[in-house]
Amino acid sequence: MKICIVAGARPNFIKVAPIIRAVEKAKAQGRNISYSLIYTGCEDDKTIEQSLFDDLQMPKPDVYLDVNSDSLNEITGSVIYAFERYLKDNHTDVVIVVDDLASTMAAAIVAKKQGVKLAHLVAGTRSFDINMPKEVNRLVIDGLSDLLFTAGIGSNSIVSREGAHQSKVYMVGNILMDTLRFNMPRFKRPQILDEMSIEERQYIVFTLNRRALIADRSNLEKMLKGLLLKAQDIPVIAPLRGMARKVVGEIMTGCKGLVMTDPLPYLEFGYLTSHAMGIVTDSGNVAEEATFNNVPCITLNSYTEHIETVRKGSNVLVGEDAEQLMTAVGKMVGGDWKKSTLPDRWDGRSAERIVQILLDMKQ
Image 1 (tube, rainbow, N blue to C red):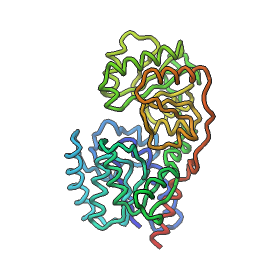
Image 2 (image 1 turned 90 degrees about the vertical axis):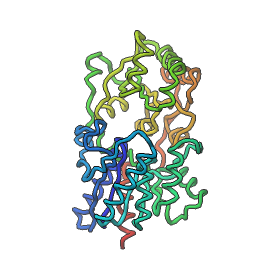
Image 3 (image 1 turned 135 degrees about the vertical axis):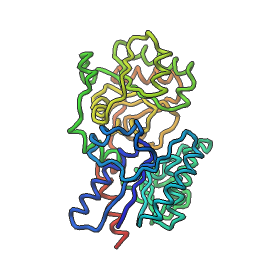
Image 4 (image 1 turned 180 degrees about the vertical axis):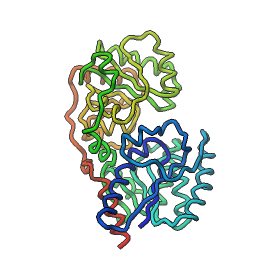
């Protein structure tokens, strides 16, 4: 069996690394299975530096499609063209696509048109806002997929309601936890903590990526000042990159308590978040990892793709409301947080389940 794994952005590699390890393990046991790793972007992409692959202990991509654009339509068209050429020249039994990017949707369309079995990793996530481009991508990818690998029972219910046959749907668990559990013994304490003499559980982590939040500077300023007010004397460490770093730096000039730092390598960021008093973020992945680590987490969004982080985990949603954020931070600092448990199958064995399903399918 030849598997083609398609990654479209940095977070995708964190999710596919465990699959590569599981494939290599099965191969070492004499199973007839192999893979190729495709990155839809360029080899000189600064977001996928060598340290990422070193930290994840995974190889760099076998093939780069060299698609580089900010236009979603251009990305879709270019990936369709480049990936179609790849599949024509390389025998493939299964294409695995990850998450909900435009490049992910494009690869899914090509696989289906080429008659190759399509598997969607992290299927069944929904915002229920059809005006979001990613929501359109999710619907298209899930609708085309032959295998839907979901993280939880909520996602199973969504794809079932939308008409997916039960034989297509596999609740394999949250594969982020595979990577987290594998790398936890290797986490590295970031230098910034030593430089500022900050102890574990004595700081809050802040991350920001969503364009809508960054664009509304006035509201973002209210939220950040509210966060610092309620954090009192507890430092808020913010490893930010790109536009997020620029905007936060401009609107928070001179504000004490916010410690902006360069983006951290995976192993250092993992240490930072797993040893924090709490986390304030707009990232679903960060919130999921917080649930695994039982670290209080506040998500700056009105929805989450994995409702398990709220129903069972350590996550709460405050939308983009400064008042709600301040209330939640007050509880976080005061130690008044809900009890968290681990959702079903968030056990670090998702990749093993996925590879076994693929091998059983071939028999």
